[in-house]
Image (cartoon, rainbow, N blue to C red; front, top):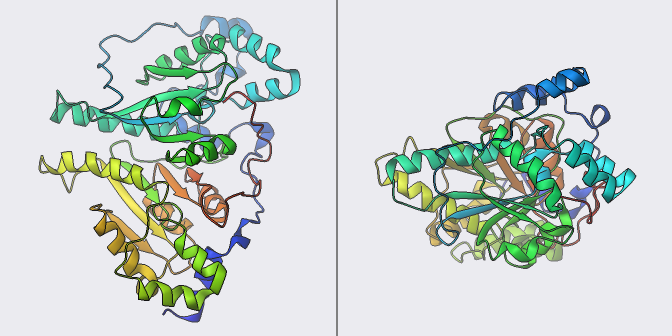
Length: 400
């Protein structure tokens, strides 16, 4: 049943009151990245932050040569791939351009993008995650040269096609392998997600994320962060919360209706009944599918994909049902951390995942404070209509 302190921790986890926040991740030195963030992102690509300090004529000399890299591998067919849809504003840092759009309007925004189309964007919060996906693909192609079971990244944006050249040039500059674009010219790209067989959608727009979830597509909201911790270049690490992320919000509903004691009783009574699936279960399933390809080559201990369950549940009081649910689905999780209400930040600081999914903004902000790229999954009874927090400044019609 857990100690009173543990139960109080779980009460905080399950309570919707944790949606009150004090940190605004978007507030950083005039919208610019901190030096720590710049240093971290520089480790994954050329340092672009020094360009702004040059004189205009020096900038002209350093302009990007928009050439297309040679010998690119053939992209997999969408029906065979694990497709990750990312918005332009989470893959790249477009905060300056976003301010132009909001303050001066669409026409000035497009004009600015065209005038600067040979100047690459700097990396955004999803950049390291995408680079890790490509590193996994490289190893898969070495082991299975003819297989199309690979990650396939699709740039999903409602930007005008005029902006496309700058995005293409930036992708080539950073040597990313992204061949599929969806630029909708102001319309929502959500309708195209199923056509691309999307397994995961990442966006800075919470409204679009909710639309995707309503369509049954795994999705999460990403935020511009002041600090991003350096992560592994050789192993993709993905961390998940449990309830309302991998699992349904059934347990949260019990807690809200009947309290913590009834929640414990319910979990004990139903420990042999699997929980229903949550919005990110299908993405864990896709990761597991690729992991097994490495296991088949004797690389279980050296697999370049590692998954983590980081939950505020107590192991003894409510952990059994979570683990039995995963087993019933035929899914493995590499590491399971039951924190009994303790903060998740210290564990995430040790794990250093490329991406962490949680349904509680309290944990998303706590993770971001220590530099973990954390995504909000707006699902379940606690936040079916989440309060605006760190995304207050977003506008649903803005280019993404």
